[in-house]
Length: 396
Image (cartoon, rainbow, N blue to C red):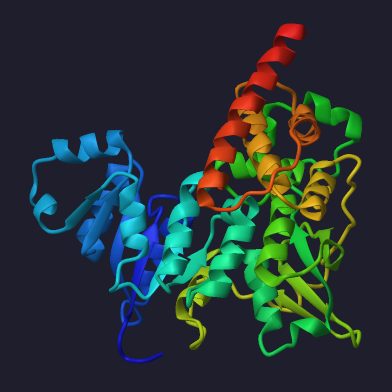
């Protein structure tokens, strides 16, 4: 890398990806400088970051977070440029001094506009919020084609495919494989899934994640969303994207070429690897304090074809991708509402994908022209799916 540190903006700095991005910056202060951060309302997470990294800009999005901030009476408030409200995300995303914008916002809807803003400003975007491409894939594609902005994947599986494609002609790809850990229930008998509780579904066998993504992992919807993300990121057709259960979670992505050869990206499962790669690209891979794999650990790797009858979320995602228009958006939004209802104990585990299937059947496909169309459609589908659940509950 050159001698000048890359100036980094992190949108969603208090979440899991945001914290791990800060860990990479902490280990490599000669390579990166934290220019700005944005949080929703976790002021308690923000203050130590300001003390350690002294970012020039701080964005606080929610009124509750701003209320907490303005209640403080301390020197920190006078050392930064404060940006308030939703507009803070767009201002930071297009900040002229920034070299790379990390989109790590937990709320996928909230992440769409700043991602587009950053691309239109010609920024390099490290995208960790998959819902941006799922809901606004066409709009993101247009921005990538018509601006100087770059989009680099931070999802471990998509980073794996990206790495395997370096130096390759994408036309020579036969198919790609996204791996899935399988979540806690992939070996559970199908009839037992109806009795799964939120507490059981939140016990992921390998990772501690947020509630929403943990439930999506248990239903395999998360992998379905990643199939859609891969299609928009790389231009693959649905039949080129395969999913396999790989419980050990060492192989993150596979590319098979037309001549029969394959490339695998294999590493210990640690999100700092794809984060650091997106930040440092196209320069050297940076040393990281993650466990090193050896061939002994790889002796017992397993791969299984997913059962889409037992886990229909994956099948629904492929269908949504194949149909196009707003189908991926409806899939994602209906799933969000259904997962929330499951966590509240209002529907059964198996009803999550039933709600999604009903929503896809009930609401006709619509073409969305711009980001305003996308955001309005998200709000509309949220309301309609919530009404659909209320009607179903009354009918019981």
